[in-house]
Image (cartoon, rainbow, N blue to C red; front, side, top):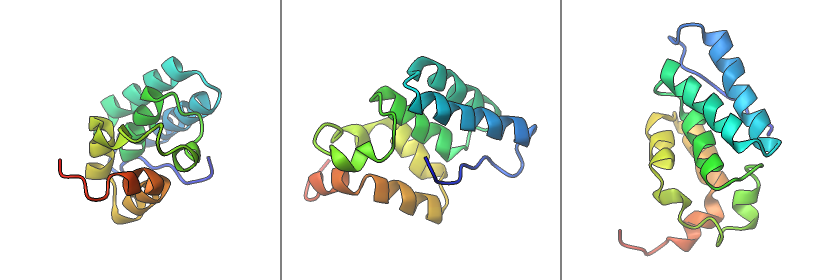
Length: 117
């Protein structure tokens, strides 16, 4: 993953929480989903408004190692946008981060165009 990960500016122990978040994404890419989930849960305990941690949890639920997979196999992940983790990620993300998430999920979101839910 090449994008910049962030935790809240006012988060206590910001550097160690950021390292925990990065470790979560490393574990995710290595296919260590339970460990990654634990990393993201720890980040959320320390920083409940960390959008990247919720996005990581969403990826764990679908056992997605790399974010790019969201674009290449949209049909497989079409229900991912219904997860509370996705909703939380969008809720806490700034506009730049929202644009990144929506870009990663662009093919999935196309499948839902016209849906009324």
